[in-house]
Amino acid sequence: MRRGRPSCIENEWRISKIINVLASLQQRKGDILRFSDIHEEFVKAGIVSNIKHRGNTRRILRQLIEKGYLEQVERGKYRLKIMPKPFQVTELIREIREKYGGAMIYEWKVGGHLWTLVEGIIFGLPHNIEENPIYKAVLEFLLIRLANIFHAIVELGITAKISKDIKKAPIPYTAIREFILNSLPHIIGEYSGIDGDGLPARDIAKLYKILIRHIPGEVNGQPILVDVIKEYVDIGEKLLNKSVNISELIDKALIESGEDKEVWRKIRELEKIVLVIYPPRHLIDENEDERELYELLRHSIEEGYSDAMLLAHMRVYDEEVVERVMNYLEPILGKERKNRLMQLYKLRRAGMILDGIIATYFSFKEKKGKVTEINKFADKIEEEVLSELKRELDYVRRYGYTLKDMIKGIWLSDWPHNIVPRFTDFYYVKDFRDIVVFVKESIKETLEAVGVKIPRNFDALVNDSYILMKELDELLQKDNRRVLTALREVLQNER
Image (cartoon, rainbow, N blue to C red; front, side, top):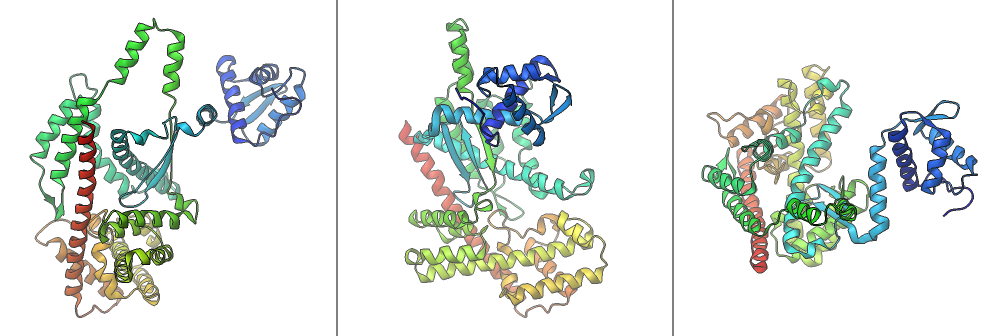
């Protein structure tokens, strides 16, 4: 036990412990806490070393007031000003770390096959859990979905924070995509069935097999990997035959022990698992993105993946980072392949610029689209908008992005997330025009509106771009099928 003056409460774990002690006292004693009760609890918890050291308690309370965690309502009486839940979670993390060290900390990131979307830590999960190949495969599958849902939540948060009126805040595309995508598992998994609490796993597998028979091979020109979906359902059924019901095992253990308190304690200990998700590390550590991209690309090269997989990795990183990493990898890639990849990367970047300009033009023209587009031009007349778009085009062209590259890269602008340009998500309605014709007309209309001359070989540029995207997408699908094959081999080895 500590002696004398306590250490400064700047330490995050110490703060969380103090807040938790006060929150627990508040649950027992009510909203208003008396100094004598607080002091007694601090001594019991080891925060203050001796019942005689009342001055130490006063000093801690004064610091908590200064930091905004606590308020003094009258002499000798205090009240918490913050919600204790976040500090309880922090305290739980501290407890796991102190008890198990690194043995129960599992770090993960999503984007190993394409790009880093989010990263996270799971406290209370064995760090060597991936030594079980089934656990490894299931974790990767679940975390990819979790990461995309978290990314959608982040975009909701960003949009809400930049909107002056939260009730009128525009809805981000990514969030609605996830809403639509998860509508099927939400209803099937949560509300269907006799009891209205979701279908059992075997019924879900049976239902999916029925649905698979009716899924088309493509929608609006975009391929759907029906055979891959079927493979996953088949794999799921095989895993289901090996699965156990954890709730039943726990209930059995409790019954056999006569609901012994020690058994209850051990069960609660097993359930102490905390998931922490945060943005990609390269947004936090400016040097991390270079290290991460190097690792991703080197692994993909060593595994024999195609240029499509490498480009998918490169797509979210800044050009300076990509160029440095590609220079590091030139001895492995060879100069020709390195130059080809850089050309593809720059084509995609150029296509993104044109895609954004077209989306901005149409959002102003039709008064819909992304929040930044509407806010940027909300109070401007047409001439001002067109003039600003023209300046934007001229600016990026001075930095080496030619108009021909922008047109040729248009089909790669949102790839591999989407095989069509992003602006089509908002403005393309399938009619007598196919998607290629619509993209051509949209580019022409935008360029003519801002006063930019259309290249003579315009049609060929758009057509070549479309063919290039289809070739890359086919290569990427082959790479992804390799991943599925590897998963199947793992399952066969486990038999």
